[in-house]
Structure formats: C-alpha cells, structure tokens
Image 1 (spheres, helix red, strand yellow):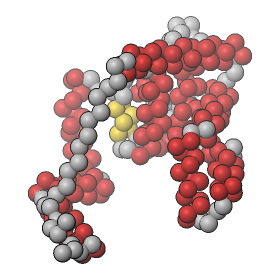
Image 2 (cartoon, rainbow, N blue to C red; image 1 turned 90 degrees about the vertical axis):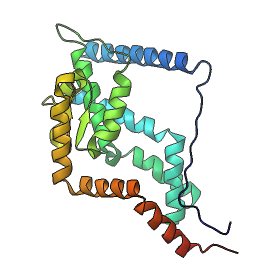
Image 3 (cartoon, rainbow, N blue to C red; image 1 turned 180 degrees about the horizontal axis):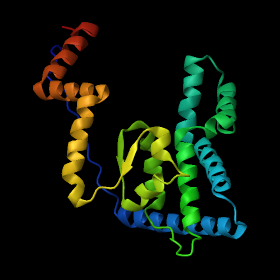
Image 4 (cartoon, helix red, strand yellow; image 1 turned 120 degrees about the horizontal axis):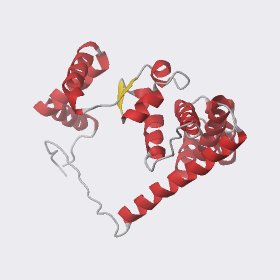
Length: 232
C-alpha cells in the first residue's frame, strides 16, 4: 500500500443464531427464578440489609475471579508489565479477588447493595417478586453508574438506587433517574446544561464536531503517515 485513504471504516454484522432469542428469554426466566430462591433464603434467615449486601458483594468477587477472559487479561498485564512469572501472576490475581480490596470495587459494592434492597423488597407486607430484567438491570448499573453523570433506568430501579441505605447517587455523584414522556424536554435541557459546565463533556463535543468536520480524520491520517511512512 503506497497511499493512505482519507478514512478507514470497518463494519460487521453477526446475524442471530436460530434459537438465540429463545435462549435469551430462557436465560432471563432462569435468572428471575434464581433470584427468587436466594431472596427466599435470605427471608428465612431474616438477615439484615448489610449482611445481604456483604454476601452478594463477596459473591460478585468470586464470580469475577472465575471469569477466564478477565483473569487472563490481568495475568497477562502482570507478566508483561511487571515481570511476573505465569504462576506468580495467576496466584496474584486469585489473591486479589479473595481480598478486601476487590470488595471495594464499585461494581462489587453496587451489585451487593442493589441485591440487598431487592431481597428486602421481597419480604415486605406487599412483597415485590424478582422480575426477568432485574439481573440485567443490576449488571448495567454496576458496570456504568460510577462513570457517568446521569444514569437513566426504569422508575423502580431508580427509586431503589436512590434509597438511603443504597445511596448510589450520593456515593458516586451520579444522578439516577427514570425518564417519562413528559420529562423528555426537561431532560434534554439538563443534558445541554451539563455539557456547558462539564469540561469532559466539552472536550467530547469538540472531538465529535472535529470528526464531523473531517478534521479528526485528517489529523489521524497525518499522524499515521509520520509514524509509518508509506512504502514505495
């Protein structure tokens, strides 16, 4: 290749497997049933919010520590960046997920608190049974909430996240809210004001505008040419 294109665009489409939608629905149904069993056990044991949160936080760490795609990446970083041997890297990763440090990860903390809140809601005078989307809602909140300014979810999950004993909005400085049809205009105004006062949002907007105008791609191509001069 002796010339650089003005831009490079890659796209892909993976059609769903024949039974993928059916499998997803079955997984959601199974996750609801699993939550119901665990919440029922917590109710029988009559344990507190803090105890449930601690158990669920520890369970999150154990599950994370068993995810090969995650642990292998951590081991790879220790081996190539810190000079660990393969065995030492594997031991260090296992030790981390067994430690109190892992239990302080935002994803672990959020997961524990939300499950504790839903478990208590399961044993009230007007019990709220787990729903098929609960596990996925908790995963989304645990993954993204600490790193955004505003998180939009359904009304129930927003109310749970903002409960005093859950306290996610307070602890992570994130606005957690639902979004009804009548609230859309106010929400757009909120986002507009947020971008005007937030330096990160301002930078993101500048990058977006530069990409739209073509300046970003031109700069990218120019930098690439300097780093990797085209060969004849």
